[in-house]
Image (tube, rainbow, N blue to C red; front, side):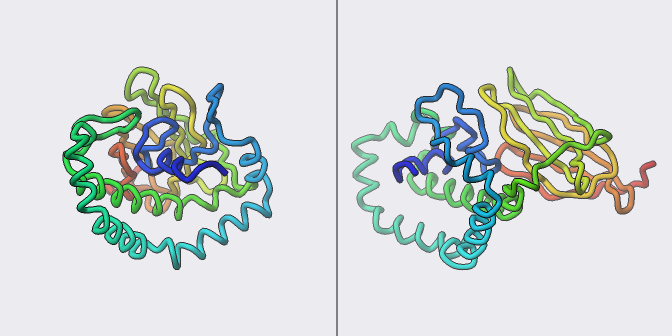
Length: 240
C-alpha cells in the first residue's frame, strides 16, 4: 500500500496529480512513465463491485466515528500543542521552510500556525467532497455525458483545460480537468440540469458555470475558486 509518508501526496502539500486540490480521485489519473506510480492492483480492486461496496460502507462508518471532522480537528489541535516548542526550534534552524514553496508545495505560509490552518481547511473540503462523490466509485455508476448536454470547454492557462457536461443518467453537472500533465476522472457535482452548461475561466481552474435548472427553468450558477466548489446559486428568471 505504500509508506505512510506518501499521504502528503493527497493532503495539500504537493500539486502534482492534483494533490493540492480537495476534489478528484488521484488513483484514476494517468501516471504514465512515473516510476513511483501506484500499484496496478488498485484499479483492479476498484473495478470489483463487492470491494467498492465495502470501501463505501467502511468510509461511512469511519465518518461517523474516527473520521468525524470534530474528532480530526481535536487530534490536529493535540498534535499542534505537542509540537509547539519543537516547531519553533525547527523553523529557527530552517527558516526558509516557511518562506518559499518547497518542491511541489503550492503555497508557503509564514507561520507554522498558518500551515496548520491551511491543512484544517483542506481536510474539511476534502472530506466533504468524498462524502458527496464516493458513490461514484461504483463501477456501474460511471458518469457518461449526455449527448444533448455539452461538452463546454474552457482554458485557464497554457495546456490547462476544464470540461463540464450534463450527465446522462441523472442530468447532473459533471466535470473533468487537464492540469497540463494528465486528465482527471469524471467528477460528479450534482444538480438537475435542463440544459447544457456553459463555463468560463478566470485563471487556472478558477471557474464559473451557468446552466438552466430543470425545476423552475431558472438560471443557476456555481463557481470553483481554485480550492473548492460553491453551492448552487439561484439567479432567477424563467428561461425557455
